[in-house]
Amino acid sequence: TFNRARMVCGAIESVLAQTLADFELIVVDDGSTDDTGAVLQERFGAESRLRYFRKENGGTGSARQHGLTHARADLLALLDSDDRYLPRFLESQVAFLDARPEVDLALCDARFEGDWDRQAETVFGSARWNPPVSLDAMARGAWALPSAITMRTAVARRLGFRSVFRASEDTDLIWRFHIEGFRLEQNPEILTLYLRHQGDEGAAQKIDDRTAFDEDRLGMLEKYASRLPKSRDIVCAIHRLKAERHLRRGERAAARARYWQWWRAKPDSSKALRGLLRSLWP
Image (spheres, rainbow, N blue to C red):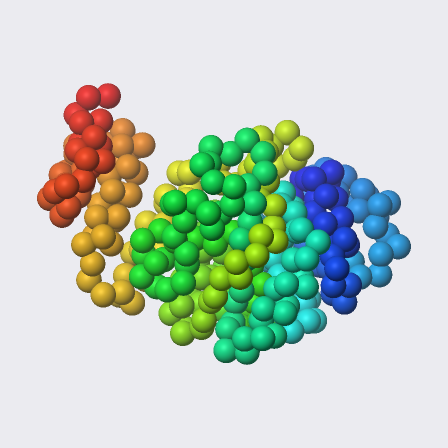
């Protein structure tokens, strides 16, 4: 959590309300400048299962890694301070993994809450949902909501959370998860609330920084491309992301060249043609 003194309390309360009571709750304060520490001490100081750690601000990846170094359980569940668990989250996820010793990560469904521009009630129910079940899926833009993830702690320690990609450390971990040959399965139960907010209760919502996510996705495609078979979809994605980067920087000639390469690689792409027109006329 970072500068979400009130919001994080809701996340904590959703963990304390779990039907499975045998857990440790690690809260990592990533150098908040508000009164997060004092608020948590006042509200949860008597809760023996809660362990609070404060560190210098380093971003989401470093905060998750800090929590991982202190984790003592065999399973690790993630929860962002602006999301919530439904009461059966831990019970269902633990049972799911206990029944499947060959599975290393369970990804549950999540219900959208708040002012989302979505046509579905849940993440899995969205027509645009691309499950992150393989390297091929990751190359096509798959992602996983961190607050829907429960994984084996030994696997998390082997991979680690890194800060190379500032907005997508969780997606980077899933890339490396598949490269290492680990197995992910979807738990169809709706167990998490994916909250939409405008930053009025603390730090701004990370998902609003689309530029950062596009830069991260481009970086991952380039970094891990050697692990993937040659694919027109991957080539097109790289051309598109580079074209949009050039356009954001006002580099219209470079953007135009990239959009043209994208269209040539996939001639039926109307999006490529629209981008080409954007590069011609401001």
